[in-house]
Length: 289
Length: 126
Image (cartoon, rainbow over all chains, first blue to last red; front, side, top):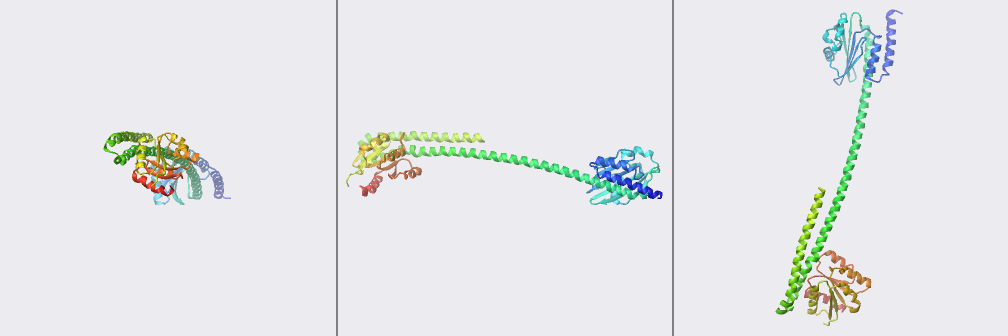
């Protein structure tokens, strides 16, 4: 077995280990930590950065720095060369400038020996991925490592989207649950409003029944009490011509006067009672408003 | 025209009885007229007096016209009744139809013509 095939075998063993571990991770932090732990067995690098675009929005960036904690940033700002990569989609390889580094990586720059910047663009379904690597004379990266880097990027981004979609699902489920709770709450409110309205309707109906009864009483009072003395007056007029003038004055006129006075009294009573009924009705009505 | 009838007037208003009595006299409607302002007294003397016809007011204190009719029913007294009321309410007129012995429903004031109409109505029966 020659050296390169031995290296190849070891690398693939390392990769299958990483792949197995990645398939078990549950969170983004864990994804970063696991990838970071295995990276050094796959190829040489100073910094590896993977940025994912989803529907033209930066979804996430992973930055791995040798012997440092990985950095995972949601909705990260793109670096200038990354913007270029997303635009032109042509792989790049050139000397590294300090302006190519995110702020937190800047202090490491002086430890690197003639660092080089590698960059690639790829797509996977609706996602656009840009990944870049910094190597130097000590940690040299070459084209033979490309295959394993591609596999790694594919693995990390796939896992990321699985976790992302899982989280989305959980969030949506929570929102749905929230919505259902809201709907139930509103239903209860509506039910209460309906019940209240039923109460108000029966109260108003009771009120109307009472008013109607009062009106009926009033109309009965009018029919009986008001007409009674009037019918007497009319009755006297009916029989008036059966009397002589003298008898008319002596017998009928005093009775006529008596009946007329009674009619006057009842008229006053009717007016009083009408006013009372009206003002009672108003009072009760105001009580409801 | 022969005077055959004995009429009982029941009205709490003395003057109403006075007027109706005069109208009955002048129209030659009845042979004799007895009048009551207390319905209770009228009821208790009903058996003794045996009138042919009762002129009954509806709106009276204590015993109103309806109670009077119920009392007649209770006694199984079949004396014919003419309701004479100052009420123009249709409800009363409808209610009167529940009593078989009520033969007419007259609204005050009565006049000679209403009495004469009644007289004609009753003639075949007399």
